[in-house]
Length: 356
Ligand code: PHE
Image 1 (cartoon, rainbow, N blue to C red):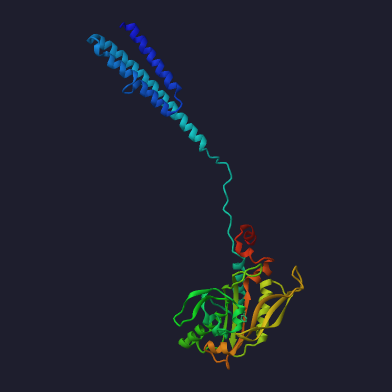
Image 2: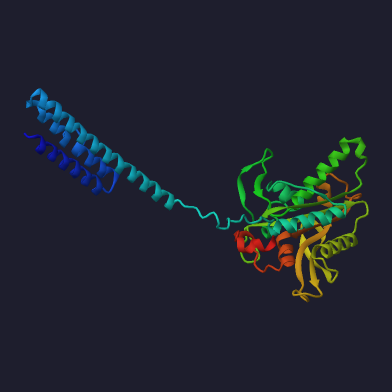
């Protein structure tokens, strides 16, 4: 084999490697091309093996020439690898490009739910009139919810308030139920308050109870004006000389403050509750504005029944007063002009964000 032919075939080899590398479209194809020339069974390796028959001198020159060709091929490979890595990086940068001039996503400001807003107003207004704010269990037993309120088992008035029963009794055998109104808190608060006075000398003799209890209540009801879960606020004012007149004044002042208008009147419509006697529904009528002229029922009320005062552990000859139970949702609907109760509980942000 002449030297000229030998270098000629090596030049061709280098050139054909260069072409293969250039044709490779992916790193994997490039590595395949590399294997075809530089791999164990590659063409350069084959050439090396082919030197076995050559003389020592021939081996020297041929070996050096093959080595040179191999280096040229490796250099070409390195150039293509680098080009491919550069292209990949450029592609990634392009794909992940950030436009730092775009406006940021804004975090919307939160707000209180309209029921919470109404609840807070109610606490503020009654607080300013000297009412304490109480809180009680939503899972109640039927003694507090009904019996202690002068509404014994099998009394037909129980059917006015069907509820959800919990399949469990308390230590005294009273079934648990979801409270149908906040009225059970009349008994709980009065007994706890009286006990506190009796135990603490500094508190002196108990002369009155004045409390509101806002909270969640439950009934088997579901339509545009009734939800199985709703909100009430109980009011209780007992003292030695608290009369229906005080109820009227207190409730009228509350309504004026709550609706921010003096332009409304109250009406007490005879009604029935087992735990008050006499009992009345309280209706309000706005004299101006979009609701003007309609009587709107907002509350049950009445003079606390002597048996209920007795169930509080108090002497009905001494303590007399009134209680009321108003729908917070109803008050919120009237105040914010909402015509469907269910809107409050759908959680639709378009509705709720109007109250921010
Ligand atoms: N608890 C009664 C109801 O939910 C309302 C009420 C409370 C009536 C207090 C009189 C006195 O219907």
